[in-house]
Length: 138
Ligand SMILES: [Zn+2]
Ligand SMILES: [Zn+2]
Ligand SMILES: [Zn+2]
Image (cartoon, rainbow, N blue to C red; front, side, top):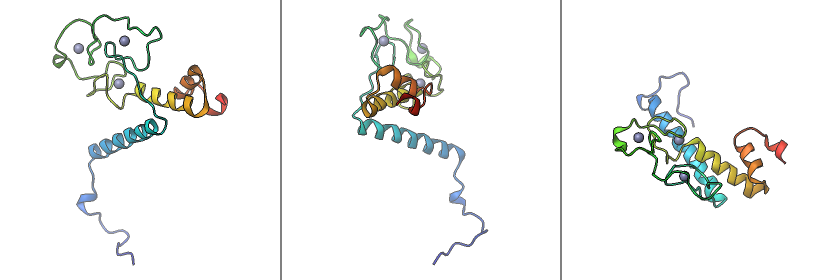
């Protein structure tokens, strides 16, 4: 028998703060992409020098010195001195190798589409970026 009374005030522990909800949502999203990676055996490549996601078309980075994962500058400085922001997507509080980067997620979706539908790289990328619908691509 259901013991809850409709219309009764919520207990205080159910009043989750907005911040906690946001953290939970982020976790859930990361888990979703992790499952996608596991399912299609996806390994996301990221350049250790310029932090570009995916393979360089030329296989070689154009930068000689590593870019700061916060500001993207190639001038040598302590990254701790920089404002914490992913210069690739602009997310505050993250560095260029963060798991929730939209560029990383788009790469995961692209590779999953290539595995599942045998799309070529360009088609898969257009679908992953929303330029093409799945129906149009198939
Ligand atoms: Zn690079
Ligand atoms: Zn920097
Ligand atoms: Zn990012």
